[in-house]
Length: 332
Image 1 (cartoon, helix red, strand yellow):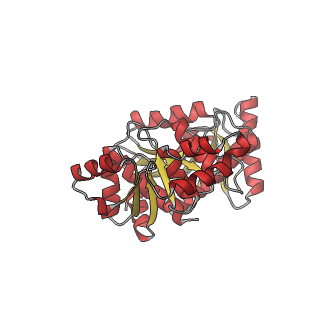
Image 2 (tube, helix red, strand yellow; image 1 turned 90 degrees about the vertical axis):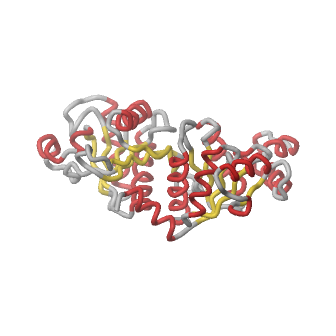
Image 3 (tube, one colour; image 1 turned 30 degrees about the vertical axis):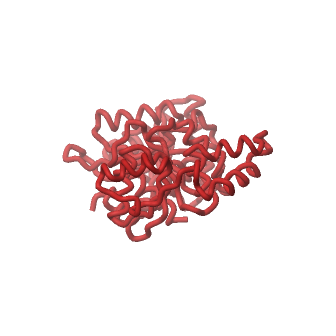
């Protein structure tokens, strides 16, 4: 079974309630109907009822197939405004501003998750990543055991031309610009946990650098080494190695030559990049030149699942993110 099919099947076995913040977008509606039909999730679409209804009809669905919440008229809006005011008044948000905020689709969707009206939320098909992530951080918040909130892309190598096939985690490709050693260690540990919860296999974590096992001396290399040691000390059972160049982590023959004592033996499935520059460039090269399917950015370290989409996403991309969000919710 292909990794993506495995995630979809895992979601089908433990469906959850997912709220989609951009219910007035046709791609989102098409994905919602598919997720509902295939038994992955109960779905709430946020938006104006008449516009959401038009999209539902355009895609062969009916209003009874999903739940629709319009923040302007919802019975939940008053309670959400009160709760949001409680949450944000220390930041200078008064009641009037709170009432205005919860009428925004992203905020309303995140409040549904915070208030246990849904298990996870997805945005970003229309909204920017900055707005989507900021809302998740402000409303849902960081998990108590997470040092920071970060992100990853799930990279699928499943095409005939891929010499090595499977699912791989690349992090952090979308959020933390330049983590220090402690932050990088936290990203590594969360990424390993994300891989294991989504794929059901043991994570093998490579801490990437332009150096392999001391082949170069630089402060940036030292940061990766320190992060590896911090992660290993915090979680002794974590299978992790670094610093490693990508080929030493991914190709067994190269690992044998460059890093013969590595515990990974060129079989890493979680790749932690030293900064956002390297990670974002790396995943896009793998996607655009290598033909990998990239799902994400998936957020980790939040109290409850909230995920982002690319504004260029397809209905299939939204459907796959629904499946990922369901598995995240079910694993808590």
